[in-house]
Image (cartoon, rainbow, N blue to C red; front, side, top):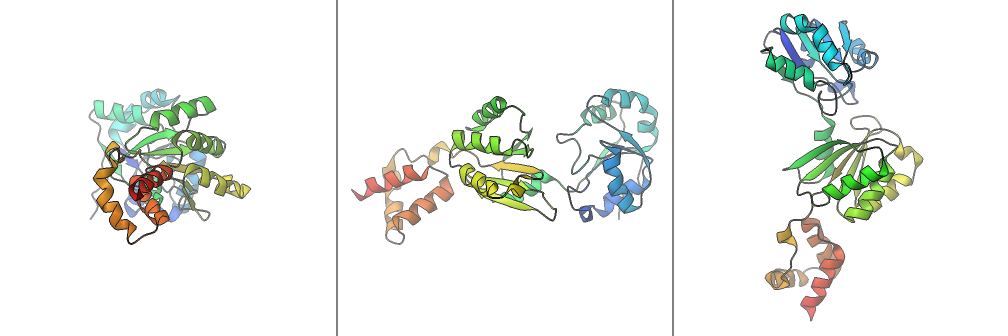
Length: 281
């Protein structure tokens, strides 16, 4: 049974594409609140009209956040206020940080109404490890800054997640291909929408798949980049692994062994192949 809505700020997640992903609790909170703080009222009205909800909307952006807080201090303390973003979970690459900080500093109740998140969905669909990951927000606009970013994450031991605009997608993939090579990635397109699709592989193969059809470059994208292989997976001393590799050689072809070892270690295939040749000598 859900609690009665009380005064304060509720941070409510909304659908990232499919309007049917709204939760029962989110609908209840939106129905019973006094005011909705959102990024783009015109965009939010699409969802609210679908739900048959009519509320006063206040537009919140990075440039006017302090002004909105100052104008609505009474409402924040004495009414049921809701914060939503254009899509997904608020505050992630969206305005609202200063609003939440103000509420916390002034003992105004803040609660979260969880729901859809493109970050979580993209990780689930990537096929990459999810135990540790880092979110870096939107890929920068200039090629130089994108290159610097990719260089910085090239040694990252966690899976990396980025939002990528369609205008920067190919440039981003070029940088990934040139700097991190054949590390596994996934590019998630239009999550939860009719045209949802996930491109998986190394940066070069993913780029080639996307370029096969100009329609592939349209939409919204989330990129997931695999972590760098751990140093203890680098097989510097091949003798430590010779026994296991020789066993594999009795059951699998050289090509199969390369694929298996690469899948679990992310070590360059050419490097694995050379190690296997040494074992045969």
